[in-house]
Length: 59
Image (tube, rainbow, N blue to C red):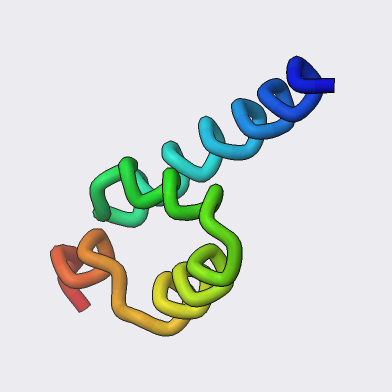
């Protein structure tokens, strides 16, 4: 059972790390997805903030 949980954790963290890195943040923020309730707060922060990668693009 522990191996399945570890596998699920890995297949969740790796794509989140890449997405967050492409948004311009440090990919380590993806580790917060492990923490209950903090992951929901993190989702809303990333959804409604201006991403650093958007700030550097000319309008």
